[in-house]
Length: 136
Length: 128
Image (cartoon, rainbow over all chains, first blue to last red):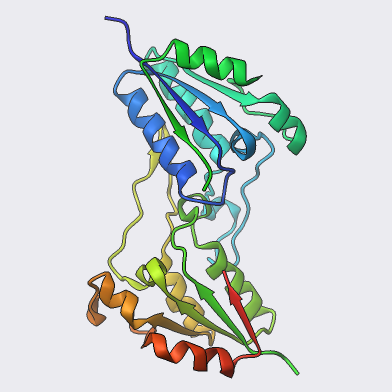
């Protein structure tokens, strides 16, 4: 039987709520269960994969950048794409192009591509199920 | 005159895993370091930040493991040592079923009816 494909739509920007991490947990679980996963990042969520995110030192924690080991969301996404490949599955991550342009965040980590709501609809049509995780 | 500030956090765990701390608590650490007199009131679900036994470790996506998870109770202890009074709204602590011995010793519980007075005792009130 072919591996099922699940689609997620995310809208939250990084560093603002717990929803982004929770969504990535669901993506991680789906990949571990052998699913192919599509993600359409809409509005602020296009910044999740922005390649210029940079780890930093944290003086409040008393740690330098290496000790702080800050996992930027772009690294989590890259790790999920790699994990899917390793397991013979695919994580297809598409960022809404107009949302990218509005925010000036065109540079994404490898494996992430630019698209439009039409890509999301294609995802939906080819998926077993779709979960929309909107902003609140 | 340096204004005294009452900062109130009500919404808890906003991106704490991504940030490895609470951004408002971190911000207040920095403001205190810059000379701002601060009182911190945690209410709503944010009272849970004072629970000693919480453990956010173990997060991993693919091969990327988080090595420095948020340690929110430690961050409260630390800001208290810097001279920030940390208050918890008593009714919310009770609503979550928490007992005093589950909380870090640096926090003080205050009843809801005291909050208006608290506001009056400060020059600025910031609701995060």
